[in-house]
Length: 115
Image 1 (spheres, one colour):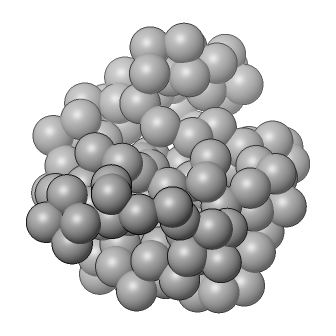
Image 2: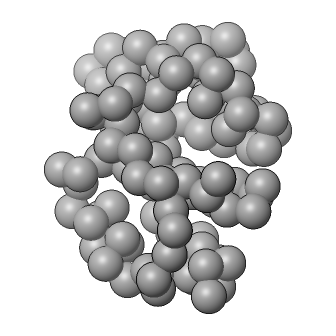
């Protein structure tokens, strides 16, 4: 099952979704329907680390003082599960491959995978 984890309130996510070709993605707004530990485990398996899934752009990252701490993989997992803002988004899982974040290169790869 191909899927996208995103925030419907995120302008960047909305822009990326609009740019996608027709697809059969299952959409999961992570604010309305938080990711489960099982879903995060699947992402971790595909990404290779929780660090790769963790967003350092989140306002909470700075306000909680996390940027001044040496975070472990267990910390990344805990924070992603505690608050949706720590997941780098959007996250696509297409044909068993994961695409994390909103870089132009990543978005181009997603569009290519869906075409």
